[in-house]
Length: 86
Image (cartoon, rainbow, N blue to C red; front, side, top):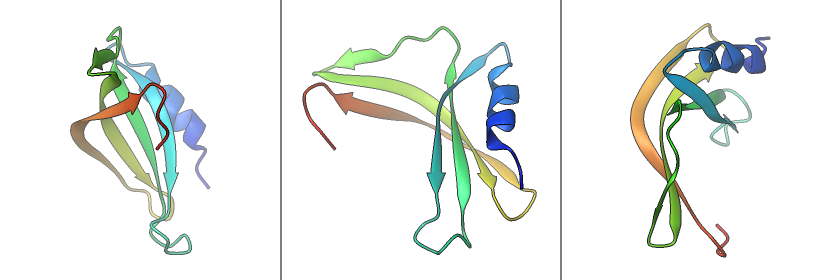
């Protein structure tokens, strides 16, 4: 079994990016389609505040738990509203 924290630490050592978060997912398949999503933000970039939402742009590296396989996904934005849940 891979140590995903070590993979994330290695990705976070690049001069261009830092690890924003690590998410665990299995798509409700009982683990058969399981993967870890390591979210990378541009190093030194600050989250933006827009309309009461804190927004962070990041790219994802998705690592499969079963096969030695990883994929770099497109850049997306994550937003959180202060004072709201969900």
